[in-house]
Image (cartoon, rainbow, N blue to C red; front, side, top):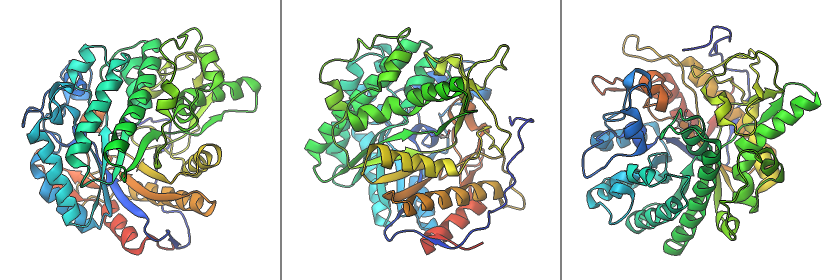
Length: 477
Ligand code: IFM
């Protein structure tokens, strides 16, 4: 569903010199449990909010669900062999909470944990560093029924779950991220409702964001106590936010969206405080009465690394009369307190998600996190693009995706040259998968999935990425 007003990407590699990354740079690819595993009712797994949501009519395009997905649960060893063939140094996966702790509280499910033990062992056996994300959006349904992330208790449940996973996998896994993209969980899940659990209330979205971060802080404390040598972090999705003009009203619109998209999470986690302008912007939505003494100290528990997911830039302006209806991630309900800000499209090439391609925004984002927030090592824990692919003579020649990766890796290298301690990069995604409310209609993978036969076909971008990893950098063009 691309936008006819926007030029599509053209798949032309920019001119550029050979760029070699620092020794030991961690080259990886990422996935998430609900997006690839399938086996939704096997091995003791119980429903998550995404099972409920995807089985509710009208929530996901074409009624797609994650019931089978890429059948990774059954094909894990051969998928790991494929990763090894590509030369991946690391693989970032998420643990399905309802698979390892059915219902979200109480004892562990040994069969669920065993799957992730076998995955970690398989990876280590192929020389691939496992990178574990604890929460990539699949909240156990009973916890949603008890209030979900807007309820404070969910943060405590998350810390218990973190401890349970650390006990089982801490001897095999060195890199841990607590949450993936808490903005999406809070604002798409509880604000606009286009993601599970599909609720739409600005105050709940803000509460959810706070309790996600509280859960993160409590989980870091539990993991640190259990695994003192683990490398612990969080993954946030960040966007440069640019005003459409120098007009004060546009500049103020950018400030508001930046507060909600970026500083809402960066400030509490890395500075131990909420931005003061955010509280003022949200005064009609919430009085922040859900924030208790001591919460921000927990949320800012020291980390070892920060994961940045980068896809695009937001360009925003002050409202105008009669503005066009917006696509889902610009829906006013995603932006409590800033509902009338206008998102501007610039007419630059877009991906199949209609996200503008803006590689310099990655350099800008990494530099900002380093310059304004932290000296910690940074990792790009996701970056990638959906395009319409086709299998022709058994091959998928995804030139647009390859050019996207190339441009963004050049941007990442520029950040390193500017002094950013960027230590790794994870392509999103290893394979095509369940793209949330878009179901299987959007393909982000370097490996094509035939959802009928479950055949895997490495695309041109996968072969290209294997060569990037082999040479630890990019060839001259
Ligand atoms: O597929 C998602 C992923 O689950 C989280 N980050 C963005 C990706 C593309 O939308």
